[in-house]
Image 1 (cartoon, rainbow, N blue to C red):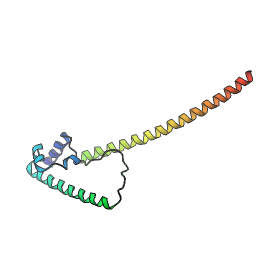
Image 2: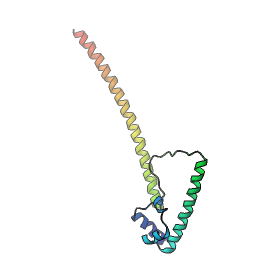
Image 3: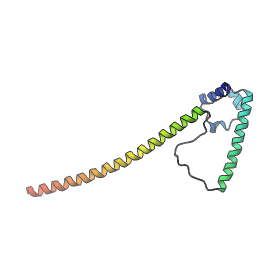
Image 4: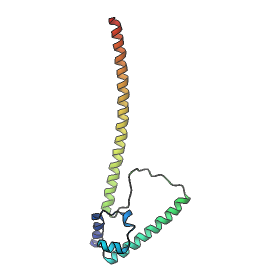
Length: 133
């Protein structure tokens, strides 16, 4: 409800993302402006997430680590709106990466064609120059 929206807005205004928030305890959350009951609930949820992360890290030591396909930083969104913004950013970033790659390939192709054309012009120039002599 509105109270949770207010909590989300407090974090957004303070530029606190999920990876930063996970280090906060209920006292910190109360100081930020959360109601104590909500701070306790968030703190317990964060403890649960931290425990799950610890278990995942232990599991990763057993299983081979799969490399991330994305090269941009990732963090946990606090709200659906922030999650949507993150996805839009990720899509835009990927589009820019693809366009950059295509532009680089096009540039290489143009350089190659330029070299070929210059060689052809040089060959014709030498041919014309030899006929004039």
